[in-house]
Length: 301
Image (tube, rainbow, N blue to C red):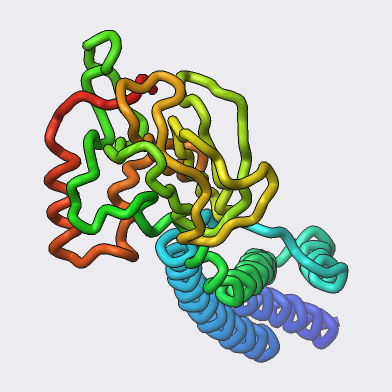
């Protein structure tokens, strides 16, 4: 009985010691698992660090992409979605992992979420670069379409009569916004298309008289007012420098002249900024000075 009692007491004491030990100290297996977990965590930290660097690089590429669109191609960058079903399926499989059983692990969920976000951005950026490639191939066409010359011959810089902005209305003698510029010229002076485009001949509105609109594409449109004669037809394609009509005084006009407007994305802009093809830097500066002098417009628009 003494031996049995001693054995039972020893087993109980050993169990107690083991319980206390495992409560405060890790077992070899637990130590091994913790070491593996620590190694995995370090790997996740490295992956997340790389993902952060890649995300910053992608943002930089996107910013440059936007600059290319806005400055070089004069258009607004789109945000296209995923192109193919394979792209969508690949991204969806990652999202399913995040929302499924593996989603319980915070490290895995966080990493997969970053990967999914980056892949989606990469798909969009890839599509965006595809669009840039198309625009680059059409660059020559675009440059030929943008208004870039004066609509009448004005080498001596003496034809500009009224500039863009607030001017005195020729009829009402009050200040009114002048949406274009007026070129003083004798009746019958040839008028040239300032860029490639398609002709539109609307009815007389707002005192323009006989006038022409040219849709140049790439969000540009030009308007030529008070014409005496029109040489082109609606829907006709014209090229820069082609004669489209002749100066007159139809509509609300006090004398023969050409009223010329440039529209960008539906808004009127100063045509002076679009005479860069046929003027030297010195001539351009001189024309800027002339247009800035406040005077009376020759038409009532």
